[in-house]
Length: 292
Image (tube, rainbow, N blue to C red; front, side, top):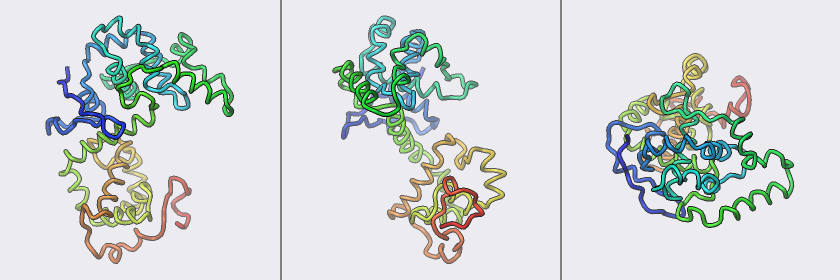
């Protein structure tokens, strides 16, 4: 079982992760990081995943256009969750909702993966998915969301994310994780920055001349981008989940732009092709088209 790590106080309306107290090694991935900083007990988590209402509310909470906020997810299954874990608090239940939502997104072969069937959840608890029966536009959707917030009342009032949805909370949590990862990964970052073409690409990104995929193509070339990077989901840092690589590159570009890291002065002279206009191939189509 993971060791406990207390959370720091709420700052500016959100919970700040106490990741600085984590050991330097091993370096945790996103899910294990969240397990530690949220002080998750695996035995409690397993008991909760035997509660059908808890599992159903996870699916509804993760539904990308749904109105189920984190607080309502906990509110909906509170009675059943409390019955199997009497020491549980309202706020702590919301952290279990967060963690299980992240573990549901893991690969099935990962031992931490938690399977939840969407169709069964919807069949057993249709009230959680009422949004699917409402018009795509109009006041009914807004009224439904407001009704759920009102029904939730003051449940888990001490939790900073109670009125936030899955996407925004995951963004906050990933940002905290990247703070941790970059603080623990200077060796990997230094190796990445040893390539002067990478430095030029980051400089161009900092000047808003390249997107992430524009960076990949200009720095590494079309053939390498197609035959190596694409095959590996554009992973540049092997111990970091593919989805987060682009955020690290973006953060490094900002660090150079703000002067937190120093650049050679002759990059634009040495690599003018990297700086040729704004290039965003993921939106603007084939790379052979002229960048604008």
